[in-house]
Image 1 (tube, rainbow, N blue to C red):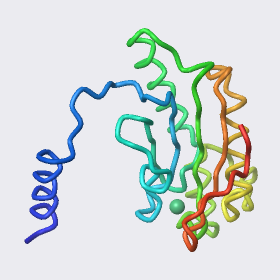
Image 2 (cartoon, protein in one colour):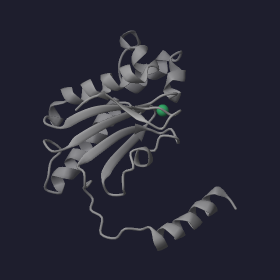
Image 3 (cartoon, rainbow, N blue to C red):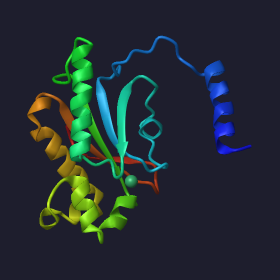
Length: 171
Ligand SMILES: [Zn+2]
């Protein structure tokens, strides 16, 4: 069985026994999680989130990049089109983790400067190599974004060796 055949078979099981009808487009917890693509750190799994509760954007490192900000701006438009807004009552949670693959790119400043949309000389190596520093930086960027005034922003670091998250930046 190929991977795709295996996954389609798993979906048949999902559709038959685990699918929830009637979920809404807007996340029930009015929360957007920004997390890493790392397969060990699925935000829905490690935070025990149920389908429909949060919206999740995952990228390399779970980082707040210009693209990520653009995507949040698009989600705000989607929310406005649905008659709401991303503001007071909403939460952004930045979820970083130990042993992140992005820490192996600190010798590729040209790649990182493109990713973060900054010049190489303004790259903070610490904010790439240390998850606590990285999460603090990303929370600060989100808090500074005038489009999302009133959104509670917090930062977590997940330990891949223990399964526990630490609240590094409180909302
Ligand atoms: Zn990662």
